Length: 249
Image 1 (cartoon, rainbow, N blue to C red):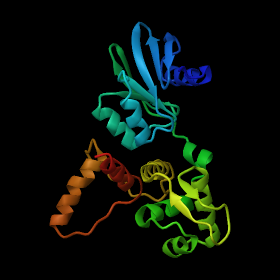
Image 2: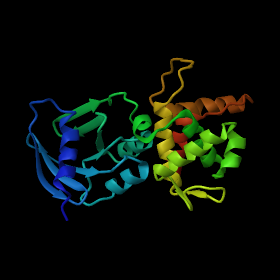
Image 3: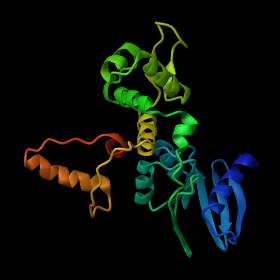
Image 4: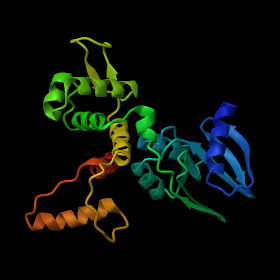
């Protein structure tokens, strides 16, 4: 079953955006969520992974034949780690790319646009509510208001936003008897991690480190702090990335 032409054009457009204008790109075959492309003289198998969440990327990796690259709207940090582990490249629609196939070498960072916030209405309140749900599994407005200290209106709006993104399900649309539940914990966690990265606070303390991998580097220094009896904790994007990777094990 072939994908609609519009979808295959979307995949080709994402790849063209990270290559020089003179590069020859041609779609040879389209089947389900896989596309066979030729870049110059190099054949490349590309798989589509929708929003780029870890669960979707794992599904793309598992397709037969195995893809050379995975393409998505935005590849999450956890998904990049999974792709690296499987020696598979990626391209996303922000322009972020990592390809090393034959003579084709591409390494680019995506345009730093706040895509998640504008498209899905992520705000600081939405982040706080999502983090509370992930930590407590609580979805009642009254309890979330008590735990976060946010206003009832902010909590209600955040829950509606998460429901609209299909991260939560609602039994009824409104009213005191309305209840919600998490549709997919892994998807909520990954979406939260991406949003936390893009909505990082303006107030920062910067320091230089030699870590190639922030997550493993933080783990090693954390072990030293533990031995010294120093209390510490990680929040936001770093903590979410650790949980995303842990859930994949």
